[in-house]
Length: 354
Image 1 (cartoon, rainbow, N blue to C red):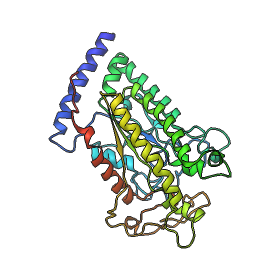
Image 2 (image 1 turned 135 degrees about the horizontal axis):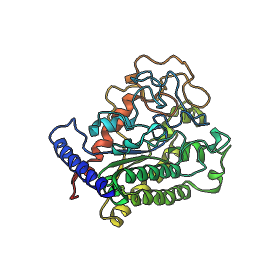
Image 3 (image 1 turned 135 degrees about the vertical axis):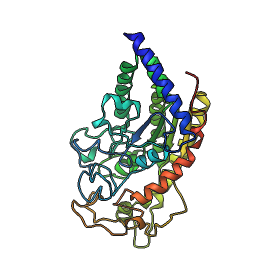
Image 4 (image 1 turned 90 degrees about the vertical axis):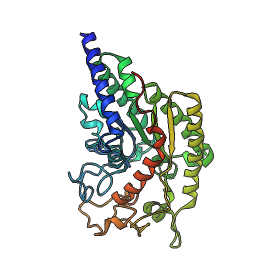
């Protein structure tokens, strides 16, 4: 039986190679056999919907421009993971882990969870118990999917070999600032650590988590840098003055993290010669048709998210922010295109010898 499964997997792999080679000539075909997504609300596509947390948005006006309506995406339409997936050539959206079936492991799974952080404690003010899926738990879920793949293809060796062909994106760290360090009423981190020290703590933990992902078979990994967190409308409303467009102290703290993250990934590429970890900065100076860079498109609750049933702006393609923290689909598209461009080193040597 095991030999039959191995034979089946090898045949599947040969077909995958053929399709991938064809993908180099036909842009509609995926450039990778599978795509795995880790992260927070920027990529969450429904994993939080049935959790005991206030960090979920499966209600209108969220999803007002998405074909299936409200799905748990923290925007009006597609999030950055959806759009990167389209650019990679995937015909269907990568399913959330909460709804994934065993066979979905062949094309990928989205583990993203709103309010999740690098640190396990991050975001816990949103619920009484541990209620969202922190990065450590997302890695546990990925290990589960890896085991399911191994059972389907006849062993860990074949599973790890297959997973090495996949692309991985990770969007983490924003909540460790917005829902931890800069919430002194709930967390002591800002009184215990300077921004430099806190960034170092995050990077040490992130290093352990990325190492674990590598051990699970990931070889083509794009790690997204933090954006301009201090420009989020909710942060400006909380900390700014009438003349403030962004809170530069928050932006400077995010920059400390990004600088250390880039150094970490350089170290990973030296340490793991058979892998490629790409530092991906989605910031851009070109905003296309987006002219409103600071006003949210919907009416906000005190959480910084859209009020249920809120009336929204009509010209959503001209807005950078959908709510107090999250981009519109139009802004997500700009970020996705920038990320896709910076991920291009991952697109070489797609097919290795079986």
